[in-house]
Image (tube, rainbow, N blue to C red; front, side):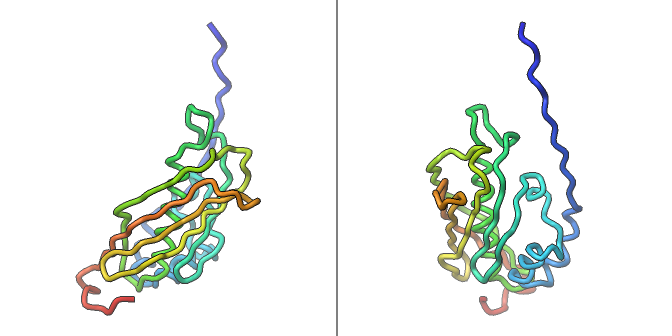
Length: 175
């Protein structure tokens, strides 16, 4: 019998996600995303868990960075594709969110990811850049790219997003 492998630990702290309910109702998507970037709002729990940082927010475009780490590995010895997908989906969704008025939401209805090279702890800081491709009255599309500091593309993706309007804003003009 072999010795048990060395166990590693990680501690994560996060803020109560209920605190986002009021700001998301009263702030435009652009103001909401800039509040995250400027640390006026704390990062959502999943961003704390994965160490994702928002680095830029412009109308229709948002970028994030993260450091791939061993705790993200699958049994195959690289960062699990689901984590790469979370990062790309976040970049696309948040990019679209910057175009929305207060109280209007969205949800991803379709997502396609192309994995081009493995993401490893030694890959260094990776940057996910998302941008809106099309914004309609009911559906929008977005795309994102994940690249390293040398500009090598690790993955890219596209998504379709459903615009969610509450009854109180259903008659408001489109953004």
